Every structure is written in C-alpha cells, then in structure tokens.
Image 1: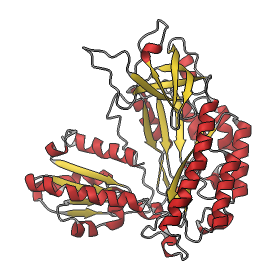
Image 2: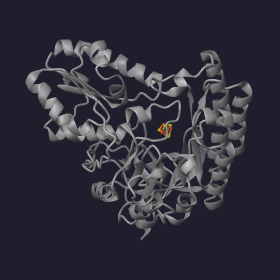
Image 3: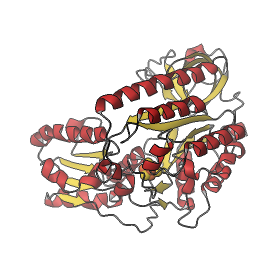
Image 4: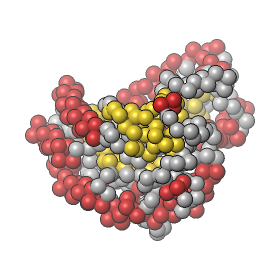
Length: 459
Ligand code: SF4
C-alpha cells in the first residue's frame, strides 16, 4: 500500500516540476512515507528523519515532509519532536500535497495536514506508470478498513473502508498495460469486501472485468480476510484465466481464544475449512499467511495451537511478527503482556517450523517447468549495458504461485529472441533454496505455451 502511495506522491511532485534524484544530498525536497503498523518501522522512520538534520543545515531551503501512517498518527507532535521538518501530511492528504508544498516554497512555513473524512473518497485521479520498465505494478482498489482488529492501527490511520469505482480501476490498469505492464497486484486491506458498502458489484466480478484487459497477463491481489473469503472468490481461482495460483490469507493465530481477543471474527476451524475449499477448487494453489506471536495473554498451549495449525496447513510462506503495542490499538491496554524474551523464542520456533514447509514446497517443484514473466536482472546483477552486454547475467521472475525463480540467460540453448522484461519464459527448476528457485530457461516467449495466468499471451 505504501509503495503505491509513494508512486502517487512521486507522480504529483513530477507534475509540479520536480525531478527524481537518487542522491539525497542533491535533493531540494525529501518526502518520507511512513508505516506505523509495528513499533520498529516507526522507530526507523524517526531515526531517518533525525539524520536529515545535517542536510537541512547544509541547505536551509531543503523541504522535508513526512507522510503516511506515522504522520497521520502523530500529527503536530512530529514538528515538536523533529525541528527540521517542514510538512506533516496524513494518509488522506496526498491529493493536497502540491498545494501544501507550494505554500511552503512561497512562505517558508511549517504545515500539518492530517484531516480525515469518513465520506467515500472516489480517489480516481490515479497516476499512470512512472517507470516504464516495470512489469508488475500495484493498483489500489480500496482504502481504509472497518474491521478493527485489536492489534491494528489501520482503521485509525487510514480511515474507514472505501472502494474505488471499477471504471477508474480499469482505466488505470489499461493505462499501465499500455506502458508495458504485464501483471497487476490489486490492493486493499480486505479485498473480499470490495464494493459492498458502495453497492458496487463484488470482488470476483471486478476480477472478471480486469481479466478482459487485453495485454495483461497476470492478476494478483492482497489482502484477503478469512472471514469474508467466499465461494465465489474461491471459484475465481479456477474460472479466471489470469488470476495467479496464490492467495495470501492472514490467520494471525491458531488459538480460538487469541483470535477472539484479536477480534478476527473467525475460528481456526473456519480458517481450515476455507483452506480445504481453496485446495479442493485449485489444488496447485500456494497459500501464504501472517502470524503474530506473543499477543497479550498468549499461553504456551495457545502458542502450540498456532504451531498445530501450521502443521495442518503447511503454508508456502509465512510472515511472522512479534506483537508490539501500537497507539490507539485496543490490545495496547490488554493485560498479561508476554516478555520480549519469550516472544523472540516463540518467533524462532515458529520460523524454524515454517522453514521446513517452505523448503519442502520449494523442493517439490524441482524437475517441473514453471512459466515466469521475466522481471529483470536479479539483485546484484546487471545487464552490463548496451556496449558490453553481459549474457551471463542472472535473471529473475515469479511463478504463478509467487515463488521467485532465478536463471542465467546463456543457459538457454534455443534460438528465440533475447530475454527482456515482460517476456514469458519457461524455466525447468533444478534447485530449491529457502527463498527462491533456480532453473534453466527452456522456452522464451514465442514458443512458450503459457500456463494459467498467460492465456492472453498464448491467444
Ligand atoms: S483487517 Fe484487521 S489487521 Fe487488516 S487492516 Fe483491517 S484492522 Fe488491520
């Protein structure tokens, strides 16, 4: 969500005449887009802001702004805490950013704008792609959340749930596809409730409409709340040719008592039932999840229930977090806090268990042929540039199940075009690592048949 918001911010600034620079020292304007979902992210944001004091001293005309959830949460307190900040703008003030910056440029004043409204926000002034080389892009379809999980700040810092009009979503995706984008990741705190408040059609229908966009190869989405995952959406994994075989379905705990205290509104039995239905409908589906360890009052036996749920599901991947108190979140007031030491120990046990499943799942794909969309060079690799091409460079892409696959271009023995970002490549998987797969390319674009998620290309 923050990546998407940052793109919107960049789009507004470019329209004002600013240019992006990779050098912080050269910048006339620095905007930090923050996340407050966990205490650690917030601490990092303040430590980064502190370091900007030196730059401001060197260049007093430098404008420093803070946006996102920490800005929304802390408001004017940030100006007191960090004296060299010029602007604090909240999650609903992105559209007002150009006016705020112009005011600071002209009057050299300090501004706080964290106004929020519960009125539906159509937010259809979405930007086109900034970076034309990107193959995969986020597209926000909803904002805010009405669920009020007791550990979470989102409803307080991003406001109530609002769905974006489908015409605006489709328009943005068409524009992205026109710029070379092949895959979109539809974003919402709970995509399953898309359109319900506004009386629009539901999320499966939105997926069906996005599927008709010519030139788009793959659709992904995140996040799905287990309580609202219905059979229509489960069926979409079979019916929708472009929908990737992956769902991120945060469970947070395997203990019903903890789930109740978290206000998640489902039980572990219901969660397991949805997992079974997903696997019945789409046996190849990869399921990933989020888990919180050390929620206030979590006993050893309840932690064991979480491990038990993991054993039953065998997730493809897991994002596990240590619980931390957040301002405004009701759980902050809950008694029976778990010690930091105990939380760290539980996290390690959980991560060790998950590693066995991640490894097992990755190893199961050895010998298979996976279709990926080439995204670009993998980390620490480069093309070598136009004058000195590097045919040995390592490429990367993702399977429909969202697993990273790396490969060497010069392992390809066929006579097809060179690999370039956005091309479909079929890769025979030879090795499995903890976080990625390794293979040899066997077909590139013109001969790749395309598995589920690539039908429009094959056509
Ligand atoms: S569903 Fe719960 S965890 Fe997710 S954003 Fe909403 S309140 Fe937060």
